[in-house]
Length: 378
Image (cartoon, rainbow, N blue to C red; front, side, top):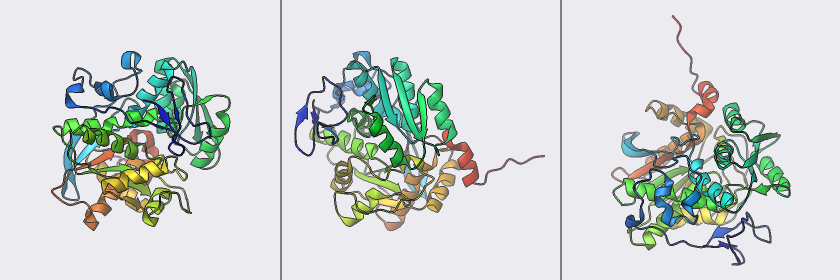
């Protein structure tokens, strides 16, 4: 497995850690061998049960038991549904799935200090895995990031720096700082997607070694969309599934660059108005792997939808009343599912998985405000 520049086709050995090509563009990984059911190490209840398909030596894996999250059955607006509880990870979000692989790789290449920019969950995840690996890290976050996320990052020993402005301003600042510290951005370093692809493996295994018909995920930078496409694609090439599931990405209407590009039928970003959204985890105005994410959705027969703030709040409350206490970013996926069911894009009788990516415990104050929650005194 090597790094590959998707524009020039130039490859780079993974012996040395990189986060971009010589020309400054992002890198992907060359295709791996993938997985067959006999390759699963069933003694391990983490993403590393799929170690034979992960392009990192797992001998010294930095792991905290991430992955193998519950897949529960229920309904959504009366339609049978499955909920993948990715918020039940060590740091409370799906980011741990990619971070265990990325940090294991970076540590194996001798790195001792890393830099990341994040709206909160990725920073919390990297700070935890860096601590477990004995690495130092600096995390840049928007000054509007929720305090519980900032506290979680700082508690793990990271150097937390708040940046004024938008989520993109935070990313731009990280780019400038990358000249002094290795930029371990989960949006740029392709070994992160090497971890998120295990979501596809897990769904396949939990569904009796078959693929669902539909997978719905929140869409910001696109690591879950790309990861699902990579993982299910490997299973398809190995004859373990007979067809790809349809992948649906959900964006907040207030920040929907992928949605606008999808609607325009192009593979590049188009002019998009951006305003603040309560779904802070997907408030990404200039995502990195635009082509890959758009192709993943289109090639699967899925689509990208955009949901309003009111729709997100409604889904947030509906999920909580099912006992699924998630942050607004996760609830955006539920709002998208409501649209998809109403339009007939997803039909009753299909096996559909709604991926819930982050816990509501990191956003309880905001959730209380959004749902007007109050305790009753006596």
